[in-house]
Image: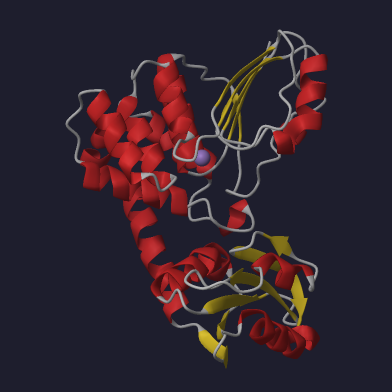
Amino acid sequence: MADFDLFNGDADGIFSLLQLRQVDPRPDAERVTGVKRDIKLFQRIEGRAGHGDRVTALDISMAKNANALKRVISDGADVFYVDHHQTGDILDHDRLSVITDDAKETCTAYLIDRHLDGAKAAWAVCGAYGDNFQALAARIAESRGLTLPLGRLRELGELVNYNAYGTTVEDLHIDPAALYAVLLDYPDPVAFLDDGHPIFETLQTGHKQDWDVAQSAREVDVSEAGQILSLPTGAPSNRIAGLFGNALVDEDPQHAFAVLTELSDGVQYRVSIRAPKGRTTRSAADLAAAFGGGGRTAAAGIDALAENDLPRFVSAFRDAFAP
Ligand SMILES: [Mn+2]
């Protein structure tokens, strides 16, 4: 019999598993995680998890794991699934137990907090901060009757969340599985913070240095539509590009932004596009789709834009977002 713990490498995933495993320890479980966007974690245990095995899945969309999940269950494993993303159709099977809620203001760490009746609520507070739900975080603390240093827990939640941004685990300051293992040694986040473990400073410094890289972005194009900026090749850019785009459009909601990150081949860019928040324009997803990318109305991306296509992208960006 084997145990598998599948969890999103972001704050919500890590703080969910911490709560669960401090109440129900499974020290020999294989921990399966990755960067924030790497959510197809059932693929990694498909064909290996089977009869009598216990699989736990936290903060990864069921819709995106549907086929591999089905296979793991039909191979005989028991699956406990907790998540707040889109589920798609939930498979009806007695070896699958699901806790889900796709309410706008909820997160997996909160669902686990409810499941455990608040047994490890301080970790849940950090998870809610990591998913950017400040009101929910404060509400969890209050409902459990805890007096907590919320500002410090917020910083921890946000730093652990930030740590999961990158294109591969090699990009990250700390492998999420290693970060989880360090935190697991502490009964709660306050004990971790009070102990002064060096990993906290690594997270803080890394976050600050990445923002310094973002501040040095090069201007590629400025127009009425907005701004296109470019970041150098490298892990700091891979980590910060998306959040940098969010920050730019939060600060200046009348303009659109595109953040280009030079890929290591030197002839292509990865692109994060943010439509203006304060006025109606064409969709960021449509612009991205014209260059092989995709996304949502407000935020979209292109995995590889050829240098040769850059002039065409600049004029398409101006057209899409002109006032
Ligand atoms: Mn989440």
